[in-house]
Length: 180
Image (cartoon, rainbow, N blue to C red; front, top):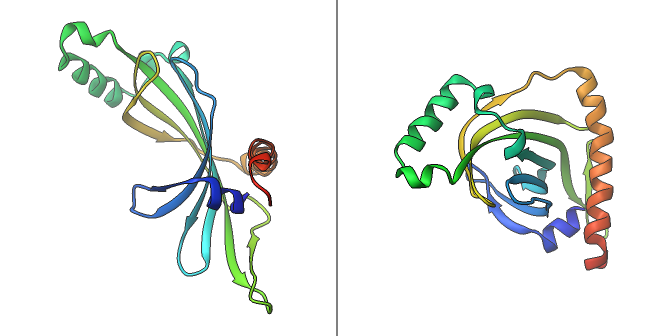
C-alpha cells in the first residue's frame, strides 16, 4: 500500500504544513460525501504515520436542528449574508469522519534496500462529526465546526479489523494499475 501511495498518490499538505502522499477512493454521489483516503505522512527522519481517513455524509440524513448550537448560528449567519436567491443552493451536511493510524519506520537493510515496518495494531483512532453546508448538487463543502467522539477499548479492537478491510479494498482497487 505504501509503495502504491508513494507512486500513484498525489501530494498534499495538512493543516500543520506537513507534506503527505494521498491515495483516494471517491464514491460520492450528488448531495453526498463518501470518500476514503490512504495517506503516508512523514514525521521526521525515518518515522511516518500511515492512515486511512473516511468521510461519510449525505444531505438527506443531515438535520440542522441536530447540529451544535454554535454551528447552527454560524450557518444561519452565513446564509443570511448571501443573496436570498442563493440561499437555497446550500443544505446542511453532517460528515462522520474516522481516522485509523499506524506508525511506520523506514530503514535500510545490509544490502542498501529500503524496507518498512509497521505497528501491529492501530496506534491511534479518531472519530468525529464535522458540521457544515453542502453546495448543491455536488459540492463544495463549507466547514462550520467539528466535535470528537469519546472512544472505548472495543472501538480500537474493531479498528484493527476495519484497517485490514480497508487495506484489502484499496489493494483490490489500485494493485491492477501498478506492478508491485
